[in-house]
Image (cartoon, rainbow, N blue to C red; front, side, top):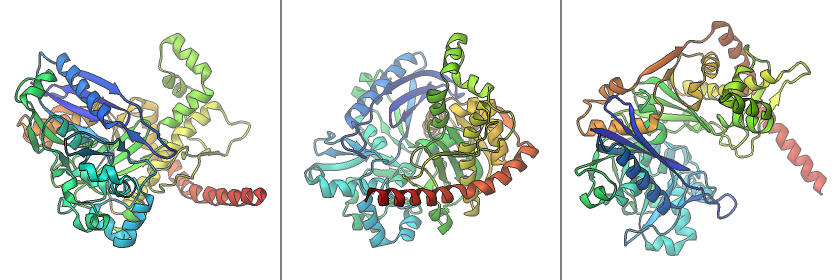
Length: 510
């Protein structure tokens, strides 16, 4: 017997089948493109996403046929939704969260309800990225589509619907809509009434780990699944990843480093105070019962080192190909061994928390003739990590404990980067032997629902294995504590400079 975690992401779906000890039996992946119909508009072909997700599930089921899948659950991207017509078919592309549409609609809701009240009810710092703003946009600008729609579903609900099951949305994903009351666990009428959206257009909310149903026999057979496969409500991908990392009590956090770096912190209660709102920190139900979670993230993340690789590391690329090594390993072998005096603002794309500033920019400051290539490589990692440390400090000021982090993602494979992070964060960091934490988190929910594990604690103890623990170097930690003070003033200072430059350019233009 095995368990499948289906990780539906922005650019691809990966299905991972685990045995009951959390070891991978089989995997399958399908990639799909983002669609850019107009500048700032970003969509997904929901029909293709569902087809590819089902194909990946069928492939994974075939690979694991000797140990048949007993239950499935889903880890998924947030916010993105698509309309489904009365015949059950998808009638428009899904609009993803970071699509620019919905700003006017968000401003309308804030004006009618109030920014603070919206946040305290929904745990979502008001922003156009949330689903309710996209639904309002559809109602205003795609009236024909809106009238034809029987449901607007996010990708968990859509996938269940495609399997012939009731459209069901877990609490952690529902919280990404800005229309869900995170305390009472139901759609918030105060928001829906002002938005002009009927709750009947949305899926039925359920706790993560709730059984949605048994996949109908004719669909199961088409996918190569055995009869009586149970589908279980999953979780938002970052929160599933935290669960799959063992982040199941207050004070623990998961640091996931990929293209984006995201820290997911477990909370023993909902924290929706003004400091959280000011810093744009969300508060969502955890997939663990009676717990909550918050996210701090930087969109530049690990892509900053990729940028350096692509633009300045042709020699290292050739060396990596010759030696059969990973180019990142070679870059980090040549990185400075000691903290640098350089300051890097890692805003090479739209910022994440706390600023949500699409107009900020990256900067490398403090270079001299004796600055080395190794200094710059280390400084880039310091900048990304310093941005996360800044977020951690803001979380602590809001009453969120961050005592220790579990590291997952591509960055968790680097001994060098984890040591650096521990020094900058000032906390222990544990690297985990969990290659697919989000999918594992979903699979564990499936296992708990079907009685394989007695509880979340039992599931984590049975499957999550620690690889190595890193403790801060006292001298480096003290250095970075001082550097953080300067870092906190970097963004405001450069923001002022950018505004002066804009004013100068406008003047020159006239």
